[in-house]
Image (cartoon, rainbow, N blue to C red; front, side):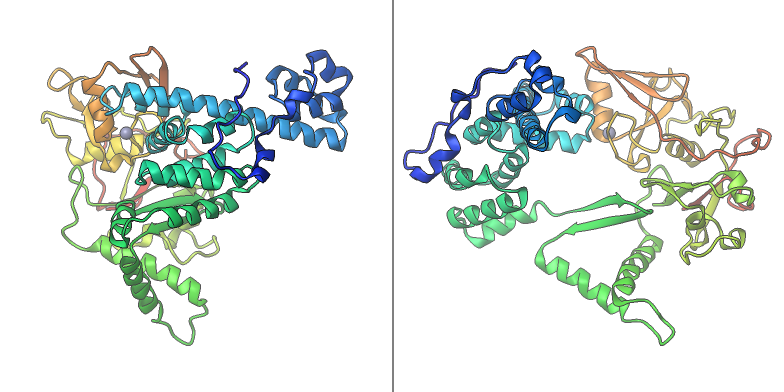
Length: 485
Ligand SMILES: [Zn+2]
């Protein structure tokens, strides 16, 4: 399938003991045939594990016919095959990055679509590929030969940006000999030690580079929980933890929470207060808000369908329902609909959980959509509509699919696009088509098509209320969509 892996061009002064890692047992092992995989599965698995594995022969192996030894050999062979393909993919990614070095051809965005990853992940993959086919060429060769795991190669590729070529070469030569036998955790530690040993930049320069990487990430986890990770400078992290500890110290004798629980609650309390402060920038005339969608039948107490928390996904109805409507649910004391300033808005959905645009009032004569239209579009599409992009719709620009004034300012003709993908739509040959089912189909200049389908929202279990003109319902009882704004 691929050219036979080449042996690594070894550094000049490699220790003799490390030479074991570079010898190829394939030189002494007969090449198995597909028929051998059926007649002699264990022998075939052993042969595939010791030489460049072949996808056809590997797929012909029946796991149930393998002995324990044969099964382990098959695992080794499949891991080597994955590594070989991963190394080859680095070449494709690097070539793509070379063809679009500044991103103005939007090939990087198409790589994200093709690989079904977020745009930021695609950029990281492309940067890693440039390293692995450039300064870390030897590392990728070891991966191609099935000796080094793709994960360890990525760990090294993520560690060297910012290092000089000389230091990068020294780090690579230091960690590779043992890296083939190390787990990712062991290898990551070895890379850190090597960087600390050879990178002689002064401490201020190192911190300046590291400080540029500060960020906050939110990872959804199981059971309707999430991890928020702060990557901060030491002084900023100390400020955060000092504030959390001080806030968490507010307790009483009847407070049964643990210290960890109080600290976790303190973060939410502090951020809730911050969200209520005046002066926060609005998007589309709407204050920063937490949007929760819940079926009307759940609001009426007829079922307990999960609600949808914008930016997260499904949450239990008890987390979203107003307190007075959830007496028969046991209790989470936190309820989004009970937070100060919560408002409810009502949207009609079809049986598939799509917000419908059938409302004559969702149009405007002005270029800028008013909040009632913006709110509808944001809740309908939820994210930037470029496939894989996770930018929340509320922080996106609202694009007229058919440019205004040829196309109206209406819910049907508007969709959320982040700045990057708004530029892509207007400054490249990507074409956008809205499908009857509410999904969006993009056709790239390479003539590949990709689709974005807004996540399904909860649907009432009983027939929806009769359709009526859409209006703001800030002063009415809860109808369909409680949201804090
Ligand atoms: Zn986007």
